Length: 423
Image (cartoon, rainbow, N blue to C red; front, side):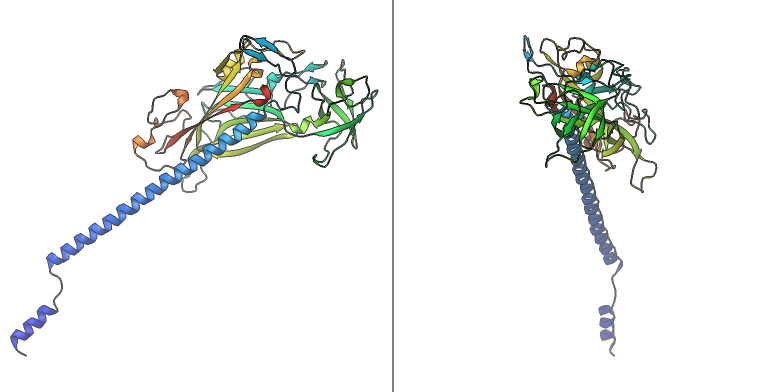
């Protein structure tokens, strides 16, 4: 083979030189860096979008669930307000009705304010159908009545109540009840007539019941035999009219629809508060998150349900109407101290805490986070919580709850709910 031809063949089969190799590597690194940057940006955007969607879903569900219970506050069939009212400079006020309580030493299962009755019959003031607490990092106000039994103390350990988050308890009758068909005027034995739309009859001897004819309501313990119940274990001065006789001796019910309810099972106390629990993500051992808890109590026990996580602040403001018909929004301590209250129901004295039967609306404030750290910049982690003012500010290193602020986004959710049974 000729030398010239051999040389040309060697050059044709030669590899890259150093310059070509470096250029190729540089281009490869640039493409790889671009792909990594695109993946990182896409991943972070996905985290932010998922966090915002989760926060929005939790906030809307929490407000919806709380609002549903607040609208039911003080519901007691059709005997919530009286037919007559008091004229004030700002309009007419219709006082709430108070069912007569014929049970000795009665108290709600979670009430820490002492017995609401003794050996005599007393009207059950609607003041007891709502009770809130304005809580700080050190305690809750008012101090009396005490926070409902079973609510954990504030702290930062798992199972503790979140520091600085408010507590609110509302009470209402949740059952449609059963129609009372007839009543023995002498013994007061009532015959219950469930219809096709009524739930199964569920009243046993020893249960407390509420009987209402849309004008008056009475609460007492009964002895039950089938679908017939008879008042028993009454207070010493109990005066129970037979609510279902068609006789002219008791004309109140001639055009009414008297109904009976299982007060022990169907008159519930619902409490909202925030609790700390361990993060369910196994990749974050030891991390704590705040959750919204709904606790339901009745005469059969207490049950708790976690509604949403990532709720680190919970505050309530109460729109109350004073004796002059003026509306003001107050916190729980201010409502509890109110003395200029509308006229009380018949038979009820001007009791302590009368402001709670003057509540017309409740303003709910929630501060939610994305639960997971999403690595956002400081400007994106800033937020405004109107309870603290109108300034937008970055979160502190440690939140009022005592938990770490992390690198999360936060949003405030607000809703105004009318207490329709207090109108």
